[in-house]
Each structure stands twice: as C-alpha cells, then as structure tokens.
Image 1 (cartoon, rainbow, N blue to C red):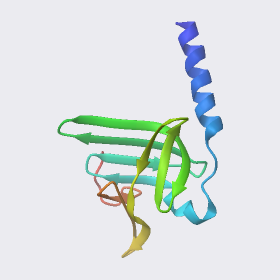
Image 2 (image 1 turned 45 degrees about the vertical axis):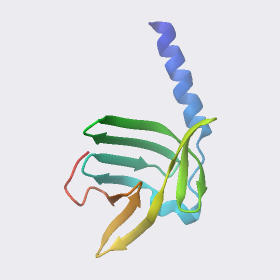
Image 3 (image 1 turned 90 degrees about the horizontal axis):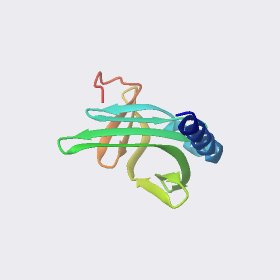
Image 4 (image 1 turned 180 degrees about the vertical axis):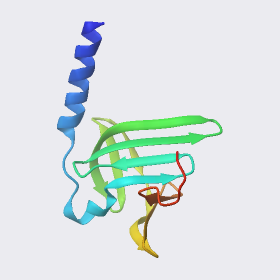
Length: 116
C-alpha cells in the first residue's frame, strides 16, 4: 500500500513537471468549461482535466497540454496523447464565454447551469 502511494506521488509529480504555462495568445482557454455531460478544466499552468459522459460510458483525461496546433490542443504524456479539436476558440457571445471542442459547445464558468 505504501509503495503504491509513493508511486502515485511520483507519477503526479512527473505529470505536473511536464506542463508549461499557456501561451499568452491562448490564455482565454483557461477556465472551467461545461456542457451537458462534459466538463473541461484548463489551468493557466497548462493542466487539463476532462470528463465526458455518453450513453455508452465515459471518458476522462488528466494530463498536461503538450502543444497547440492552431486552435486545437494536444494533451498527454510522452507518446500517449489525444488531440482536442477546437472548431470555435474561446469567444464572448452576449457576455458569455463559449468554445466548441470536439463538436460540443462549452460555456466557461458554468453560466449555462448545466453540470457534467
């Protein structure tokens, strides 16, 4: 049990050490984004927490952003990564921050009242 705690600590430390702050031109990506069944947290230091529930199950990832490719961002560690496709980058729409990721319109700060 103690060995697994130590291993988990080192794994978390490694993941945290791999992240880099968001580039200045991508700072609007930071925040808590939500839609029905989806939550996406992006921190200024480049960490991502993503959860998505569907009728077929759920997907999650907690890892650093490796890089941006245009508006898209690649999240993962080493060769294990996934690309989040951003068809609409963060923008204000009637005073509400919105972003469309993997075909889902997300709202920053939970303004929609929906929870994942």
